[in-house]
Length: 149
Image (cartoon, rainbow, N blue to C red; front, side, top):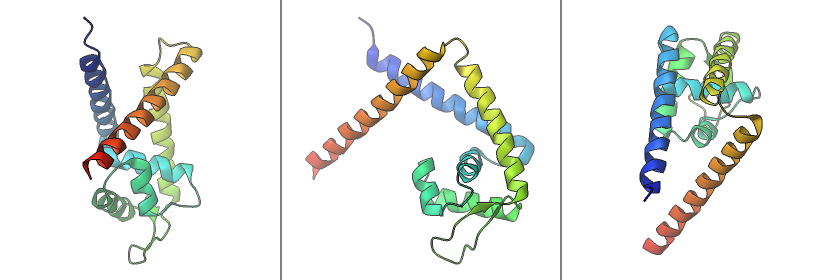
């Protein structure tokens, strides 16, 4: 019998660990951490800026980790914001935009490498399926929480 649960969970965990390792490796040049990748990525996608709360939701990281990441990025000149004001938008500086371009180029390369053997149709189906699985698992988890109350 095929071990569907084992195959699914191990594959997802392995992908996640490899993505984290790739992020960490790519950030060595900047002396930053994996969390900075997603901050730079999302800030580049939103030139109008994002609040730290919005970054928490987008990155699925905790608030303290995002606060530390943004402080480091500000100290190094990648972002600008007023940490003393609540819900102030965080924006990339020119230096931060160059950093984000580096992230985008490396992310594209990693995604292309990971999906090199997939046709465009297979790639679309895979991402649609993965998104659907994530949504269904989130619904299942939320139902478990409701039953536990």
